[in-house]
Length: 122
Image 1: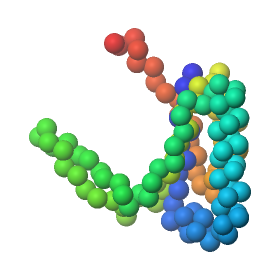
Image 2 (image 1 turned 135 degrees about the horizontal axis):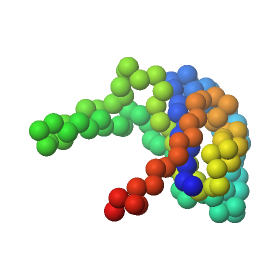
Image 3 (image 1 turned 90 degrees about the vertical axis):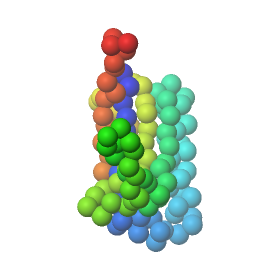
Image 4 (image 1 turned 60 degrees about the vertical axis):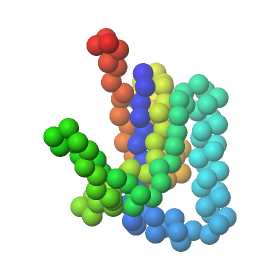
């Protein structure tokens, strides 16, 4: 089964990150590299990406068939998507086991969501 592991950040987390020394930031990034390497070696990692600054986000609404965009950030949202891992593993329990290895997990919210298989509709 495929699972999306969603990592959420917030302004407090970004402030904490900005306060880290360059060495601490490198250590944290090494943790991400090690996790990606381990999940690649096990054949579970399909793709992972860190998302750019939420201020660069555009919210898109489709009204009367036309897209209408609004620039972010969106003040009413406390948590914003910061990155994700798309993994394929045997169970949601295995996907949950991966989460503590994400360096940012100790400072943020992480969701594990199954990917719905819609192949039977096509």
